[in-house]
Length: 277
Image 1 (cartoon, rainbow, N blue to C red):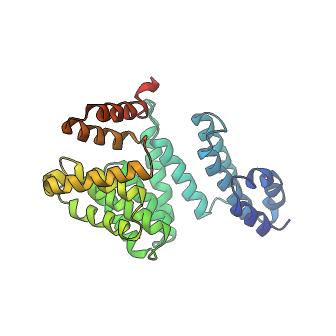
Image 2: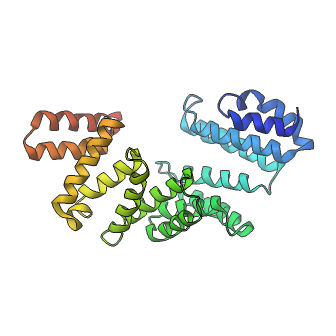
Image 3: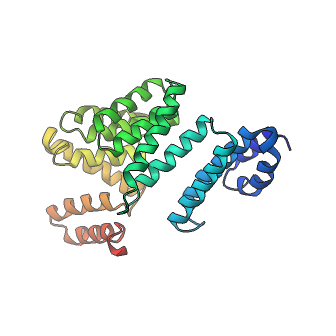
């Protein structure tokens, strides 16, 4: 089958089709279209990483790394490969571990994204990668500037503009009180186009009820609005979110509704991971 057909099939349904055609596609393409073979291997690596049915997390990371190494042998100059390697390294750097491999993984991830930016200074993938690295390093100002530049480049209504707005708002939320108004503005812009945007509901709700956010800047009116957003999030999207449940539990506790407060706090505890030990 032509390389373009393999790629089209894999893109159409990466979770269902890609695993079945991968071996034949790589065999057929590695000589005539090594770039396509490398791209398919990279797609499979990302699929393996997120597929919890495949095995343990460490096994998935190992398998994804092997697939990307195989892709690199076929097409070492692929920008998509650099991006996937950067994302994998960034993911590894975020894993809870006592091993001294965290920092090298972060630095290696940054090198991948910097290489992309050297190839193309306008690269969206490169900017996203560097912004994520800055966020992981708790450099929220630099990360925010990168995410803000992405918003300016993104078409209105596009999915990745929404993601950039959410990320920019999250950065501003970490830079309180200076970033408060901009964070609120970004979340409100998202809610103006979709009043049920789950991430914007939660992000703005948490910000408005936080002591350094809404309570400090907007007072009780902001807190009241935040609680309404959290209730909407709880009702429409997720009744087991530990952060939202705990914030609502606090609210009902201070109102004197102990049964509701207890039920919400219990849910928060059960789904926070604290009972996994």
